[in-house]
Length: 118
View (cartoon, rainbow, N blue to C red):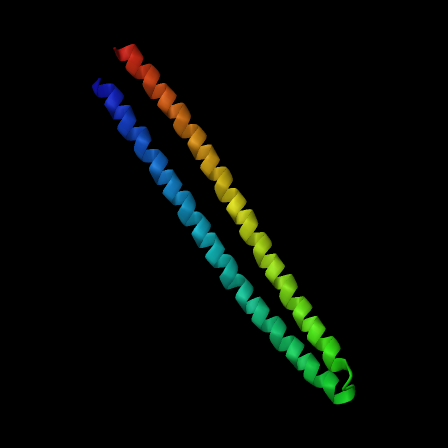
């Protein structure tokens, strides 16, 4: 019986730790994506604004077109960030599923060890 309790404590705690670690990894990865995308968005907006000002000096009708380009660039960057978040989330879900499977196998092993010990 002591051996069975040992394995329960050993593998029960591992599942919880792994779940917490995968959650922490996901949160950190999402934060990194946000931090990485933010400067890119800022630079693109600055570049577009500069281009808009220069074009407005030469062709006043281009203002609307430039605004469309700005909106399009913002949308593309948002899509990139969303795609990155989805991939990270998918990775975390896969890791969680793998953890659950490993925990189930560990429980089965513990149960067999307990049965053999009895």
